[in-house]
Image (tube, rainbow, N blue to C red; front, side, top):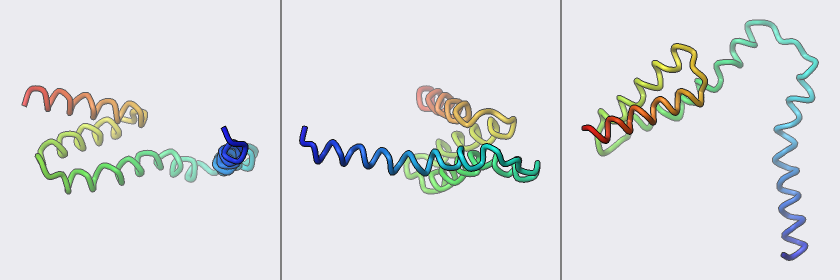
Length: 101
């Protein structure tokens, strides 16, 4: 491998690692008020909603397919499931839906 490509890969790794590491270093000693802790806990669910909702409305094959997946994700998120579990539940229900319907 060319040394220029090697250093380019190393540089890209450092550049992407720094923004991920800095919040942990800076905010590790900072204690946020409970309101802001609750707001930050809901960021993954808001992101998941921003990814799911447009896909539900713009699906071309079967609108019910998107609605079933979104409903499953919203119900799992409402009961406080982990974001990973929300996605897995939605995939499982949609797999069942596509297999039997």
